[in-house]
Length: 182
Image (tube, rainbow, N blue to C red; front, side, top):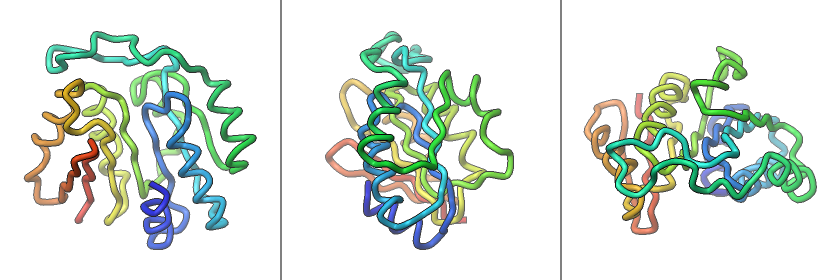
């Protein structure tokens, strides 16, 4: 994730990053550390309910809601303040985009969106919210692609795979990258 942050930041300095599904902040910490090394001033928006998986539905075979609730905003704050020491982050507590998207400036543009929400409806809502705010060449990373427990996310990525304005690449580690072409 660090190399991706470096590449996108070099091509689009100042483009923000959005992570939805922060859990305990591990990926946020990696991205923040890379931005710190690059001496970037890009904002990282970190959206999470901190109460577990939201919006589980009929397209999800494993999750029913509330899983991964063993976290808190304080855990993430501590990690960012004491480990990465990157100051340009904003935590958005609540369901994104429903409850917290209004906290993002309307003209903000994103270079990366990391979606780690585990379920179809939540991932779709984030993708549809961020797509028109993504710079050309920007990347949406789906953390849960191909996992047996995240069939809804895999289904979502496949539904969008052949749109002409994007390219989808996936790996065997459970990630899909959706790159905005135009």
